[in-house]
Amino acid sequence: MKSIIPLSFLLLVTGCVAVWGQSYNVAMSNSRSVVIEYDPVVINMPAMLQAAQAECDKYGKDAVLDNVSEGNLSIKVNTYRCETRTADKVIDVQG
Image 1 (cartoon, helix red, strand yellow):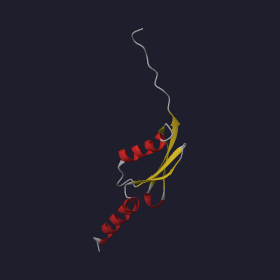
Image 2 (image 1 turned 30 degrees about the vertical axis):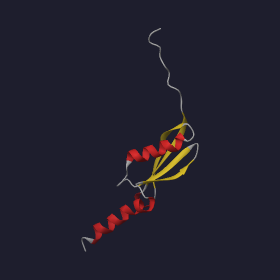
Image 3 (image 1 turned 90 degrees about the vertical axis):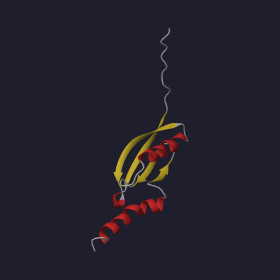
Image 4 (image 1 turned 60 degrees about the vertical axis):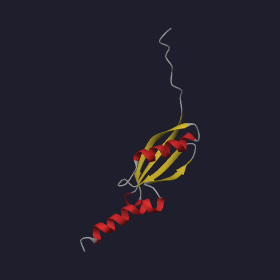
């Protein structure tokens, strides 16, 4: 019986990965925001951050974390704002 509980927990935790095919899911994306659901137990954080930026890149914008909330079954939900890029100022040190 003791081995059934950890096995059940493992199946529950890996369930989202099986459904999504990865450790996160881009639930919604448009020119203003990106919503990503993820399982904090198995998240590949660099891949998720790249996915958020890739969605904002479609509009020439940068992804900025706006909100973190909790969804069903301990799934986390991050909302990123897609903010307009501003050009970096170049300082002329020779003049």
